[in-house]
Length: 151
Image 1 (cartoon, one colour):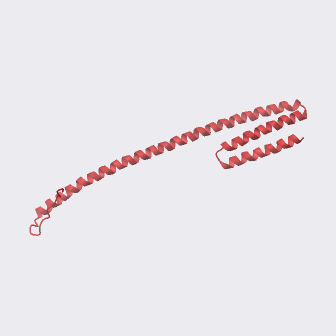
Image 2: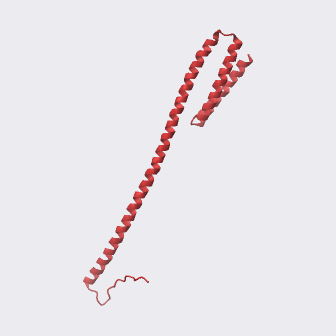
Image 3: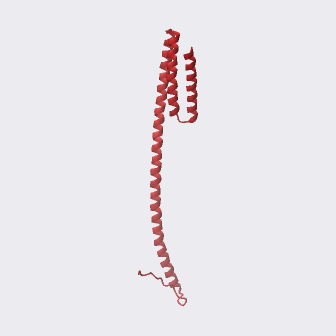
C-alpha cells in the first residue's frame, strides 16, 4: 500500500497564531504548485489547438487557391470560345458568295457546333442561373438550325 500524506490539523488546544500561519502557508504552497501544473497543461492545450486551427485554415486556403486557378482556366476557355465565334462570323461572311443551299448547310453545321459547345459550357459554369441561360441559348441555336435546314 502507498503511504498517504497526512497533514496535521492544529488542535483546539494549540490555537496559536503562529500555527495558523504555518498551516495556511503549507496549503498555499501546495496550491501554487498545483496551479502551476494546471497553467502548464492549459498552455500546452492552447498550443495544440492553435496548431490544429492553423493547419485547418491552411488547407482551406489551398482549396480556395485551386478553385481560383480553375476559374482562371474557365475564363481562358471562354476567351477561346469568343475568338472561335469571331472566326465563325468571318467564315459566315465569306459564305455569302456560295449558293443558298450550300450556305444553309454550312450555317446549320456551324449552329450545331455552337450548340454543342454551349452545352459543354453549361456544365462548366459556376451557377445554375448561368447554366440555364446557356441551355436556353443552345435551344435557340437548335431552333435556328432546324429552320435553316428546312429551307
